[in-house]
Length: 220
Image (cartoon, rainbow, N blue to C red; front, side, top):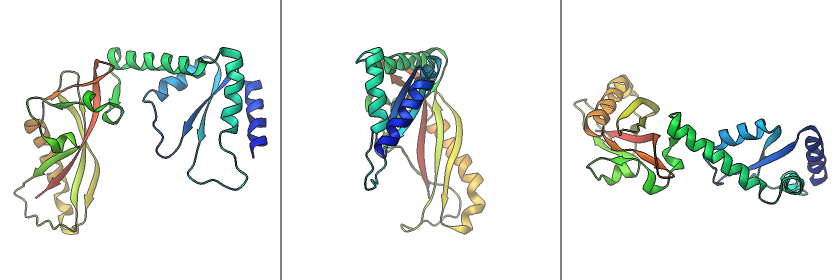
């Protein structure tokens, strides 16, 4: 298996000016500027290759042979720090896109102290990604054993306002309440706008950015 991977790496190195691999696996921490990293490698006529490190290993299979070989050759061509230099260049472009081109970053790509927070309010549930339970005037009887909830996606703009509200997930284990989906969605929108509508914006590398956020919403 390793010989096949090395043979494929040699072929790709002959076809392109270079090859850049990026490891992916369950639990691996990914940088938020993969798009810029891929664009940069393409501009340099390098092949970009994800290298999958799965959780299952088959007998006789050695992980990392392709990436290990191309990394050795790329270091000989460009120096020991070539990979980190490319990542730094991609990150710089990512920051430009965030600050000058109004690109978005997910809250999951921000450190805890960089994430948006409610202005003038400290609500631990919201810090954990959950909106305080909403009481409605609808005839809902919710038990501890079944769920009625939605995930509300929105953007926290650089000025702290919320925008682009939409429902990304709807979980209803009460068929009789499906008729209330639109009403509950509107209630969630209005609650966010009027009760939790002003935020301290997110930051990345110390710079104010537009942030993709999400809150889970439960109802009574």
